[in-house]
Length: 132
Image (cartoon, rainbow, N blue to C red; front, side, top):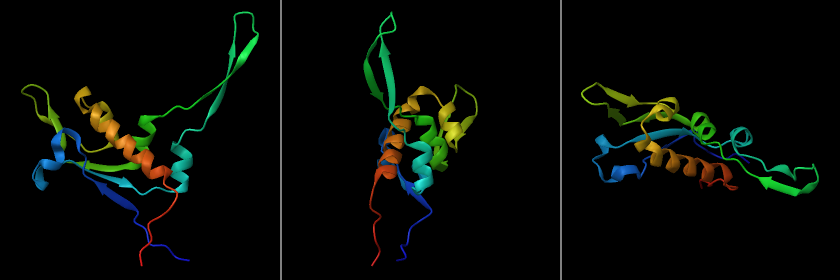
Protein backbone atom coordinates (compact mmCIF):
# COMPACT_ATOMS: atom_id res chain seq x y z
CA UNK A 1 0.00 0.00 0.00
CA UNK A 2 1.31 3.44 -0.95
CA UNK A 3 0.19 6.48 1.04
CA UNK A 4 0.59 10.02 -0.24
CA UNK A 5 1.80 12.48 2.39
CA UNK A 6 3.38 15.92 2.54
CA UNK A 7 6.90 16.45 3.86
CA UNK A 8 5.98 19.88 5.22
CA UNK A 9 2.82 21.63 6.35
CA UNK A 10 1.90 25.28 6.80
CA UNK A 11 0.01 26.67 9.78
CA UNK A 12 -1.48 30.12 10.29
CA UNK A 13 -1.54 30.72 14.08
CA UNK A 14 -4.47 32.27 15.95
CA UNK A 15 -1.97 34.22 18.08
CA UNK A 16 -2.81 37.91 18.52
CA UNK A 17 -5.68 37.91 16.02
CA UNK A 18 -3.27 36.81 13.29
CA UNK A 19 -5.96 35.01 11.27
CA UNK A 20 -8.00 38.23 11.02
CA UNK A 21 -5.14 40.10 9.31
CA UNK A 22 -4.76 40.36 5.53
CA UNK A 23 -2.91 37.27 4.25
CA UNK A 24 0.20 39.29 3.36
CA UNK A 25 0.50 40.42 7.01
CA UNK A 26 -0.13 37.07 8.69
CA UNK A 27 2.38 34.98 10.58
CA UNK A 28 2.88 31.68 8.81
CA UNK A 29 4.74 28.67 10.19
CA UNK A 30 6.08 25.92 7.96
CA UNK A 31 6.78 22.74 9.87
CA UNK A 32 7.82 19.15 9.28
CA UNK A 33 5.18 16.50 8.81
CA UNK A 34 5.14 14.03 11.68
CA UNK A 35 7.30 10.94 11.36
CA UNK A 36 7.94 8.04 13.67
CA UNK A 37 11.53 9.24 14.08
CA UNK A 38 10.40 12.74 15.14
CA UNK A 39 7.85 11.28 17.54
CA UNK A 40 10.47 9.06 19.18
CA UNK A 41 12.89 11.98 19.41
CA UNK A 42 10.49 14.55 20.86
CA UNK A 43 7.57 12.99 22.70
CA UNK A 44 8.33 12.42 26.35
CA UNK A 45 8.16 9.00 27.88
CA UNK A 46 6.92 8.36 31.38
CA UNK A 47 9.69 8.32 33.97
CA UNK A 48 9.37 6.50 37.28
CA UNK A 49 10.77 8.55 40.15
CA UNK A 50 11.26 7.10 43.61
CA UNK A 51 9.89 9.02 46.58
CA UNK A 52 11.99 8.55 49.71
CA UNK A 53 11.81 10.03 53.19
CA UNK A 54 14.80 11.55 55.00
CA UNK A 55 15.85 8.13 56.34
CA UNK A 56 15.94 6.62 52.87
CA UNK A 57 12.77 4.58 53.29
CA UNK A 58 10.72 4.35 50.12
CA UNK A 59 7.31 6.02 50.14
CA UNK A 60 6.47 4.77 46.67
CA UNK A 61 6.96 5.77 43.06
CA UNK A 62 5.70 8.68 41.01
CA UNK A 63 5.29 8.70 37.25
CA UNK A 64 6.35 11.97 35.62
CA UNK A 65 5.96 13.30 32.09
CA UNK A 66 8.09 16.23 30.99
CA UNK A 67 7.10 18.27 27.95
CA UNK A 68 10.12 19.94 26.37
CA UNK A 69 8.68 22.91 24.45
CA UNK A 70 12.07 23.76 23.00
CA UNK A 71 12.50 20.24 21.55
CA UNK A 72 9.13 20.49 19.81
CA UNK A 73 9.97 23.87 18.31
CA UNK A 74 13.57 23.12 17.27
CA UNK A 75 12.69 19.76 15.71
CA UNK A 76 9.41 20.66 13.99
CA UNK A 77 9.73 24.24 12.69
CA UNK A 78 11.18 24.65 9.20
CA UNK A 79 10.56 28.39 8.91
CA UNK A 80 8.46 31.29 10.19
CA UNK A 81 7.40 34.26 8.11
CA UNK A 82 5.60 37.47 8.97
CA UNK A 83 6.69 37.61 12.62
CA UNK A 84 8.97 40.13 14.23
CA UNK A 85 9.33 42.87 16.81
CA UNK A 86 10.98 46.23 17.26
CA UNK A 87 12.80 47.28 20.42
CA UNK A 88 12.22 51.00 20.92
CA UNK A 89 13.47 52.94 17.91
CA UNK A 90 15.76 50.11 16.81
CA UNK A 91 15.44 48.01 13.72
CA UNK A 92 12.86 45.26 13.29
CA UNK A 93 14.04 41.85 14.44
CA UNK A 94 12.46 39.17 12.29
CA UNK A 95 11.49 35.82 13.73
CA UNK A 96 12.37 33.29 11.03
CA UNK A 97 13.26 30.15 13.00
CA UNK A 98 12.69 28.27 16.23
CA UNK A 99 15.89 29.80 17.61
CA UNK A 100 14.61 33.31 16.82
CA UNK A 101 11.25 32.53 18.45
CA UNK A 102 12.92 31.23 21.61
CA UNK A 103 14.90 34.51 21.89
CA UNK A 104 11.80 36.67 21.29
CA UNK A 105 10.17 38.81 24.00
CA UNK A 106 7.79 37.13 26.44
CA UNK A 107 4.79 38.54 24.55
CA UNK A 108 5.40 35.75 22.01
CA UNK A 109 4.95 33.02 24.64
CA UNK A 110 1.28 32.41 23.66
CA UNK A 111 2.54 31.68 20.11
CA UNK A 112 5.04 29.17 21.53
CA UNK A 113 2.25 27.49 23.52
CA UNK A 114 -0.03 27.35 20.46
CA UNK A 115 2.68 25.80 18.28
CA UNK A 116 3.72 23.23 20.89
CA UNK A 117 0.07 22.17 21.27
CA UNK A 118 -0.23 21.82 17.49
CA UNK A 119 2.96 19.75 17.26
CA UNK A 120 1.92 17.53 20.18
CA UNK A 121 -1.37 16.80 18.40
CA UNK A 122 0.43 16.12 15.12
CA UNK A 123 2.81 13.66 16.79
CA UNK A 124 0.09 11.74 18.61
CA UNK A 125 -2.28 11.17 15.69
CA UNK A 126 -2.49 7.47 14.97
CA UNK A 127 -4.08 7.55 11.51
CA UNK A 128 -2.94 9.26 8.32
CA UNK A 129 -5.59 10.92 6.17
CA UNK A 130 -5.94 8.89 3.02
CA UNK A 131 -6.30 10.40 -0.43
CA UNK A 132 -8.73 8.57 -2.75
